[in-house]
Amino acid sequence: MIVLLVVFMTNTIPLHRHIWAAVDLPRSLHATAQPHALREDAMRVSISRDGRVFFRDLRVLPEALPDLVHDALREGAEKKVYLAADTRSKYGDTVKVVDLLRLGGIDRICFIAEKSAR
Image 1 (spheres, rainbow, N blue to C red):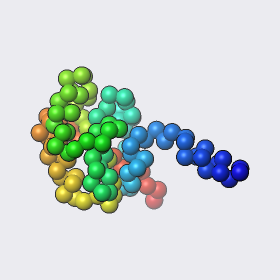
Image 2 (spheres, rainbow, N blue to C red; image 1 turned 90 degrees about the vertical axis):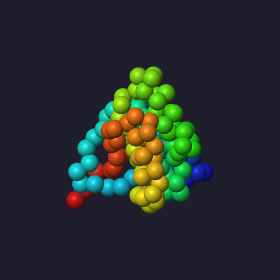
Image 3 (tube, helix red, strand yellow; image 1 turned 180 degrees about the vertical axis):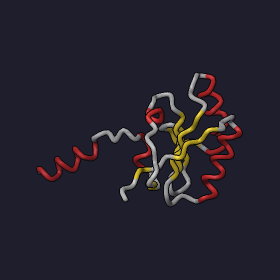
């Protein structure tokens, strides 16, 4: 019973990474902290290993990204997108998302990575 309690408790603790918890982020020696990515109005886009796309915490069709970006910019969001692409996602999926973000008026894209130890 205690083991089950521990398992359920660890699965319900918020990860503060939003949908990024489901994305296996790439590792980099020179990753820098991006505290603005955690803001509630930040535009976070995630690409899962199977090509699913998420805008903030909602699953969306990639073709909807330009309209979602326009709406977020009208609401006062920072003109920067924080993109978390799974390490095993297809390169073509990432390129497609970047192109669609540019169609939405975004020039600044920050690729999210975890800082690795040497």
